[in-house]
Figure 1 (cartoon, rainbow, N blue to C red):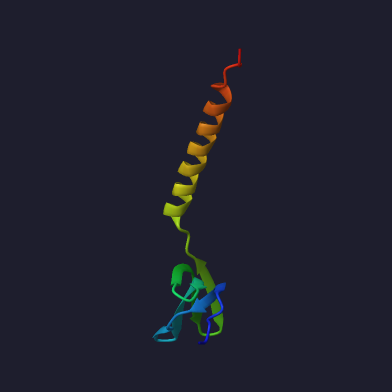
Figure 2 (figure 1 turned 120 degrees about the vertical axis):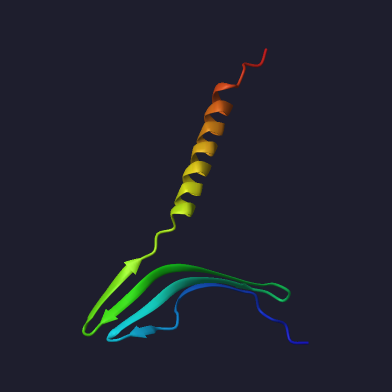
Amino acid sequence: MDRIKPEIGMKSVSGEPIQSGDTVITPVSKVFTVRAPYIDFIWNRPVEIQIQKGDESSTIPIVNVNRLAQMAIFGFGASLMLILWLFSKRPVR
């Protein structure tokens, strides 16, 4: 029986380029992959858009505002919980 070696990796992948006249637009995403004998998990998230117009090229980053808000809420909740835990300690008699 051939065993599959578990793999965990992250890489950047360019999508299908879209051409309109002399402008070429290419989406780029990060791919997080976990492969094991009975698990195959792939998570894609967009990172940037590359635009090539003639000889000029530019990159537009994609910012995930929802994830930033979630991390801020999580950080605020964890900080509040830690502060309440520290100040609610009563001395042992």
